[in-house]
Structures are given as structure tokens and as C-alpha cells.
Image (tube, rainbow, N blue to C red):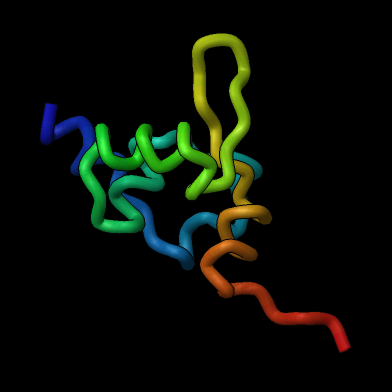
Length: 73
């Protein structure tokens, strides 16, 4: 299973073309374990949306949450 998570490692530079990320991808980006990331999403600490059984993280909301967006002047 660690191989699967490792293969989904993603950096901030690689997400600009994505609309959403999986919790596993966000966990790798933030240096969290899968369970910790799911729990943080459940508590509302990581911005996320449920789509059926899947939990997805909208990239714009994640970047805003991280403070990685430039504010429009």
C-alpha cells in the first residue's frame, strides 16, 4: 500500500492543471498519513467534498487554505 501512496506523490507545481485531488494525494503533499488526512477532512480541517463514497479536495480551496494563492489587487 505504501507503494501506491508513494506513486501518487504530487507537488504544488504539479496540481495547477487539476481540478480536484484525492485524499491520498493531499496526504502525500502535506506529509500526512492516509488516516490522518481522512480524519482532518472529516473534521473540516482540510477543505473537501464528498462525491458518493469518494472524498475529493478541490485544488483552488486547498491552495487558498495553504495560503499559496496570490490575491488579486
